[in-house]
Image (cartoon, rainbow, N blue to C red; front, top):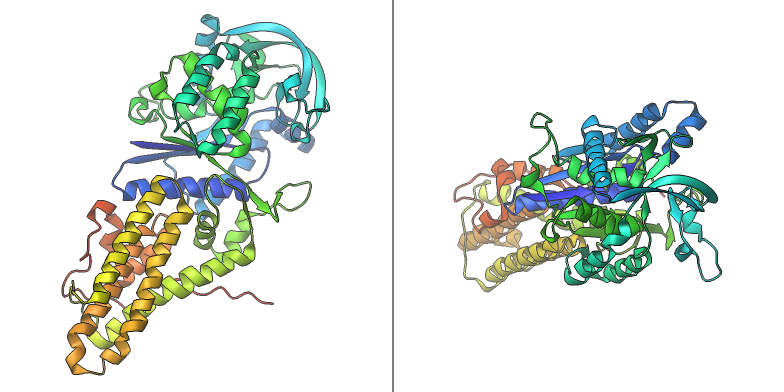
Amino acid sequence: MFYITTAIDYTNGAPHIGHAYEKVLADVITRYRRLAGEEAYYLTGVDQHGQKVQQTAEKEGVNPATFAQRNTKKFIKLWEKLGVDYDGWAETVDPRHKACVQNILTRLHDEGQIYKKQYKGFYSVRQEQFLTDKERDEHGNFGPEWGEVEERDEENYYFKLSEHADWLRSYVESHDDFVIPGFRTPEVLNAIDRAADTDLCISRPKERLRWGIELPFDTDYVTYVWFDALINYISFAGYLADDDSGLPDFDSLWPANIHVLGKDILVPSHSIYWPAMLHAIGFSDEQMPSLLVHGWWNIKGEKMSKSIGNVIDPDALAEQFGPETLRYYLVRDITTGKDADFDADRLVMLYNTELANDLGNLCNRALNMSKRFLGGTMQVSTSDDEDASALRQSLSDATNAYQKAMAKYDTAAALRALNAHVSFCNGFAERNRPWELAKDDDQKEKLASVLYHMIESCAHISVLLSPVTPGACTKIQNQLRMPGLSETTIPELQWGLIPDGHEIGKPKPVFPRIQIEE
């Protein structure tokens, strides 16, 4: 079973383009794994606890639970609109999650991994964590990434994070697949050095925060939001769950093949806290997950920010351009792991060029000419004509390149590979000119072969592109009168998907051009 999760979204705000990219990326990966013939399980959800949720709810005069649930609905509606088809949904207010968190807290406390102490120091309100001098810059200041920083003196519970630092460094150094892409590994190793002599505060006194999971061994405290939220990856996978919980069988899912997350929460939460927590609970090296870290969508090189006012609303984009147009752009115009600039003009250009002009044109002309010149009845062809052989080789090369790219989670490279074959097919049509062949009775066999190669390519592309634009690919398959292609896996993707004597349907544009009014 391929188990994929995304970082759960904090319900203090509304979903933005970064959230949408992460969920669509995970959805595309999940669909691809199934296309490759694997079983796959996709978990996503929302993080509903924490100080910021409580503070915002208080400002609005509502209960934190009401506020969190209201924002949760925004995320759910957007994922439905974008066709994000998850198998498991995590909400940190779920009593099954609460029971798992409290069970783990009790165990770690009983084993001496959690202790209580007085601490006076600086606290980041934005990140909801205590800071040390290692977080100061060369001028002795806490950087803007920490937001408002307050000095606090209070008693709290701490997890012995420092006891796991040596193990964690050794693990990261010996496992190249822990952080993907690998160029982010040095950042993790540097963070381990900073955490080597620091323990993690995992509680907040109720006198300043009541919205969280209560510590089972001290009801005057609630759990630090990160210690709570990270556990969703195992709690909703069935860890320590009752048989009648409705959750999956944990042993069939874990370890997670990948956690998909943004680079801003790689350190310290996912690469330091999380593996150290798992190690303390008793998970082996073989049970550690891999982290697939994606970059940010920026605007003209600048990070999107509410304060700047450049945040992109994915719901509005989906309304304007269509959900599948947005899905295609999000996984086409960014290299997984790196940053990219969001550009609505490029969204339109890529859609119009690669889908409307290239693939849409190929499907329309292949179906239209097959109807006009062959009565819609296809004849299987494996012609030894040099150009036809080259087309079959192009399809094979594109399929192989697509698979290699998807295995590396490089969706942009995978889509470029498919588009390369589509371009070859359109060039094949221009070189062979079936509209001219149709005028010569002596060229009927070649005409049938040329059109079969074009139609067969449309069938293959409709299967390979389906993880990204499932709705559009279903339309292509219906026009081919091959609805069964939706069940085809890559191992079954051989030349001859269209059987001899098969009758295709009428073409109808699947990718109408986007027209932008000046």
